[in-house]
Image (cartoon, rainbow, N blue to C red; front, side, top):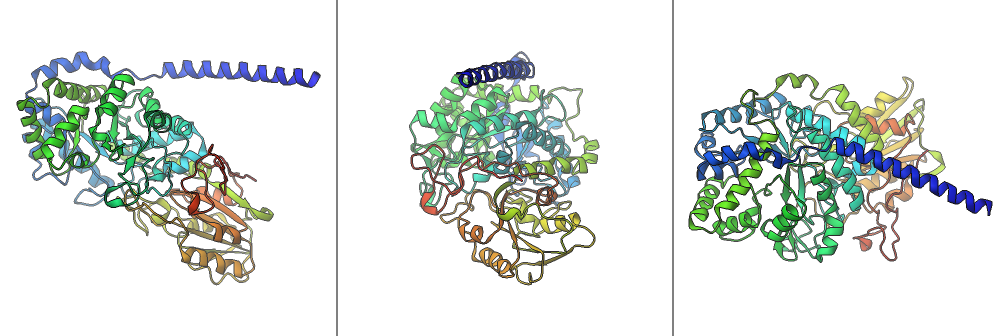
Length: 618
């Protein structure tokens, strides 16, 4: 009886505490709630009334900076936005200076237009300002999902915003709030988790981090929740040509679509996200970019989204073979801005004709342009007393030690310790000799993954200022400790301990779809060679998703899932040497074999190798 009463009392205390926390959290959230974008309509309407049809369509047109035939087209077509896709770099190279000069050069063209409406410049800054040499590269979202730390994700967003704004650019096509349901998908690492609730929590934090409390703050970066909707739930083999998962068909009833794939967007809208990107994929055979049900009825009318929709890269082309017809379908469905990298002149002319013919009503054009201008007013871009050129004073903190410290924290909190037999970890900094091996031990490109300098990423020394695992181990050990290296794991005889860093090579969308997630034979051999030396072996896996690791796991004494950690390899050695305990918990279920994929928590007969939320500590 006493025991039962104590349990009841404890439950009551917990309930009261939870209510107090929720009330406090609600008050804090309400206080920091961003200003509704529609509140800027009083400023938008007089400007809209002055605009010609051509000027309105110009605001809805987004070419790629290196896809423009002539930069004077910014004036000629009243262009409202430009982008740099994954490999659309300045001609002068990827330096901070080159990016800043490019932004200023393009922005200055708007001064020659009648209404002088500034350009909104968009990039894929997915894990830091990853297009620019010397930027801090954070862990990809799958790793951040393992931190379960919303405050840290928000901090990552704040630093990303500051580094992007250092180049003048004001808009990132992030965060990805997909809930990937099949890890064979090559964009799995862009999502935080398979779990919609975790995606909701961290998606909210990411938007708040990027945009800050007020979009008008010069350090705020316009966010873009993507890819709406169901991009992580396509049926394998439903993509074009029957290949993989990317841009395929999400075959779900509406209730299931909402339960799994909508929570991230609801959170992003509540956080005040200014833009949303409809997805390449289809929902039950209809392209998302062509669905009035998804874009207008659910997103704008039901959820009250007041910002604007930007199509994905050439996504409108996929709606219909007749480009003009495709444009009409998408705009009438609710698309507000077309990402038309090279076909911008055609888009402009066709959309104008569609309006003149009555296929696209003028009310739809006015709604789209109102939404775009709301965002520009909210960001302070229409303030005539404020320069829209880059603030080069921000160059001082770009890639700074302070920024790298936050990335290092994100790395160590994202690591998931899957195995630690005989307490091999933490390692001793005073070990006589540590032998390091593996394809990823001294490769910054592999450590960062896709969307790093290059769209698909590349192996090798991709960006200055980063630290590989091998370099980090050398920094961490005592003066008396010898650190040796061989890529294939040979030469380990006589070492105190071995560290093998293995895993995937960089990839991004489409190219990253895989029918088989087994480790390469070279990686398995490197672990085997190290084990043959008769020493304790620590395996570190770099990957954009869980992999089939049984062969390496069996031979390893300790096994760490490090995901795609970015430039700060010292975050890994912080945990390996015990300066910090491992805290990461799996954001995805880890399968035993390919036959188990797709696998999700809560399913009948759920029996993964490691369950969702698994993670050891010291």
